[in-house]
Amino acid sequence: MRIKTGIGQDSHRFDFENHTKKLILGGVVFEGETPLQGNSDADVVLHALCNAISGVTGVNILGAVSDTLCLKHGIIDSRVYVQEALNYLKDWRLCHLSCSIECKKPKITPKIAEMKTSLSELLGLEKTDIGITATSGEELTAFGRGEGIQAIIIVTAVSDV
Image (tube, rainbow, N blue to C red; front, side, top):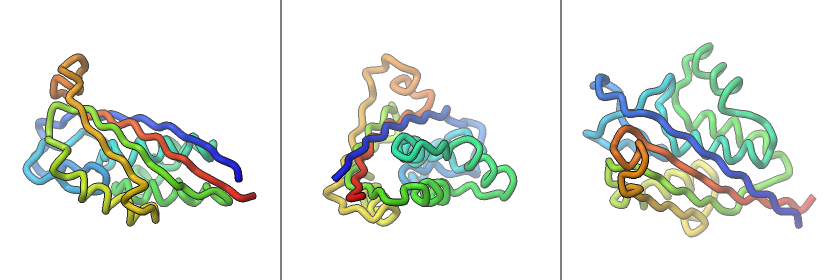
């Protein structure tokens, strides 16, 4: 058995002027919260996940692939980007995901179970193979001060080939 690990990070500023867009993290809508800036839905969790999968496959999804899907085809749902990234795994399968989110707001803990369900369905992982933590960072960074949200994800992939 072969094992690979991929790490991904993404961050976006809050869009305090946008009152029509929703805040989405890990495919879950956080009703009544300030959305994030971005061409797509700006789901920093799924974007970090794409980057982590890219770390396993070596194929840069966020960039040329997602930009083409978003800007050329109007696809703003980050779940589509993750599905595209998963296509490049070929003989590999994800077996674990660890996610750390840094933000002052919103409160992440009440939505962790829903986020695990969303990620489980998207990736075909058991909820017990998904870990999600959150921190305010003690206001030491822009994220801890409430200017945006950062997500860091590590994925583990295995292959029998």
